[in-house]
Image (cartoon, rainbow, N blue to C red; front, side, top):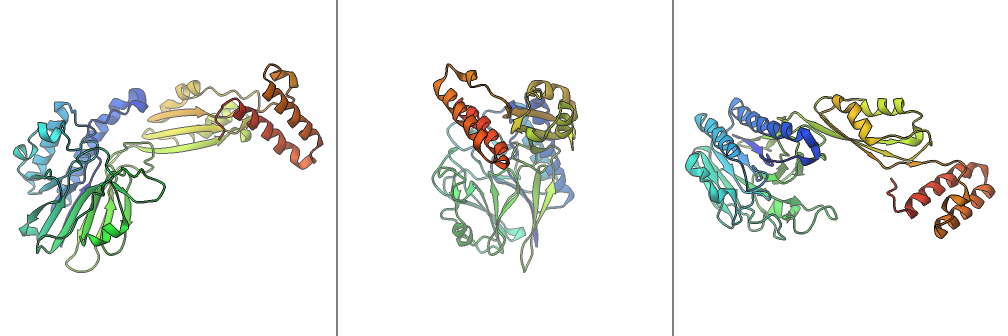
Length: 375
């Protein structure tokens, strides 16, 4: 039996411009999460650590981030834990690669860095394990990162690392290093350690086991859970076991509020702050048709309520409901004026149960005709 710690998408050096003045704090939290996963690997006495791409957010890095990586790999070396690493899409092995500028294997004897084109492999005889890795040579490619993967040794266990997108039709670009379920199974690996997606995801739960570990800390606002890594157990017989371990601090959510159901600004504030947490990154979207007296200011809401969150953003996509819109309101814009006149005639003649629907249609139609976004 062997135990692996699988991580990816650490993104040291990520800038987090969308978080404003909180970006610097999140950059520090990324470093803390990296330290957390190393401490976890040592505490759990894992046999090896796999980093499936994007250790760095870009190939241009401050010396402090390079020093941090070397420092943490040295801690693993002290615990006799080897590390395997592949370049991903953000830190791809192109002409400007950080892995050309810094001799990480020279500084970290316990590190195996897979840089040669095609499939590289490294045997660990004492573990009965062969690890396979292929570097991403650019940030985009139409080639599958699993193409040509097959066992090459007589090891008891075969594990591979790859960085790309699992093929879900219509959801990912064709040049995003896409691979298929058939390629997973034909690899004949005991485990595929995947990177590129920022949340844990099992691509296969039978045959060849293939998982995304997710990022160890929040990288993008589509991450709904705190950052994580995977502890993977490969038994001598039977199915492999995967355990999700949280390593991150921040988490994100998206809250949509229909202002047609909101009577006052105080009620709106209460809805925005429900479930607030100092480590929560919350996106609020205001939508629907609001009464004329309700005039929310995203800037004021963010300023007044942001202390309850790590970061709060408010996007107002709502539109005012006008009970008696005069036809002269758009007299200088012929199409709008004609639309208002026709809709008012329709509202007057339609059955009572449909008048509210028709009034809403008038408001949404005006918004669309003026190029506004309607949610």
